[in-house]
Length: 47
Image (cartoon, rainbow, N blue to C red; front, side):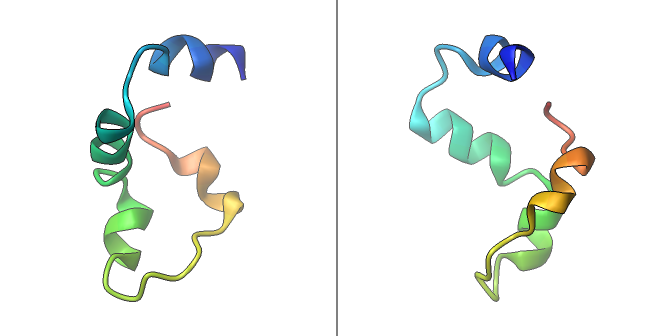
């Protein structure tokens, strides 16, 4: 968790949104707008 905080410290909401929207699971889910399972956390590219 400390690594995540260090990586994204100082990034504003818009920046976090832009980063998250590059993730594979967000792109796959964009149209349906369902909740994305936490099990995909291990697949995150930006973390």
